[in-house]
Image (tube, rainbow, N blue to C red; front, top):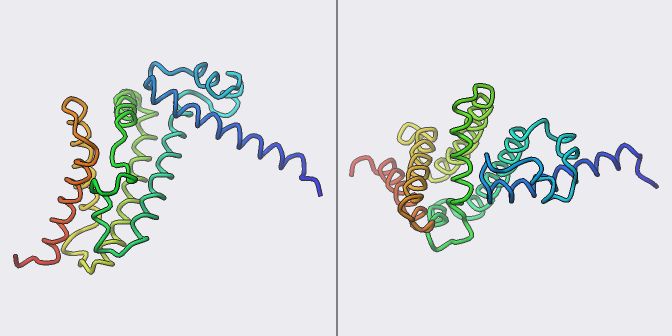
Length: 208
């Protein structure tokens, strides 16, 4: 039985958007936000500039959707890796023994930093970036809340929201420092694991 024409169009449109996002990821990572252009994205994807604008209102819209896709992929990947093993073994995922876990992508950290500086001066974009950051924070917090509960850590000893903010600050600070004084990604993971383990240990053994 043939698919309805509207269904085929929807599939084609979804494929076009996916192709454009794939190309945008490459172009933005290579050139940065400001130097990248809709023309370059269209060329890399093998589509016309019109195809880009029929799917995304602007370069900003394209970039924000690309960030959302990366966020979904990253959080889904972290969740799958974390909860596929015993709670006591999860901190080791962030160490250099597990290179499959990407702690910091230098190109993307630079790119997101560039875009954050741009958004800070653009109220409309800033509000969307803030909403996205809240979403990321809330979803990571929920994963950590589940993790802490499985470790038996009482919520009043280590608040999951607080835990998320500390780990985010450590990761962001180390990533920023590594731009000028390179720190291997595995060392960033090692330090994050140490900080996380120390906080959990203190919560589990408040008397020590």
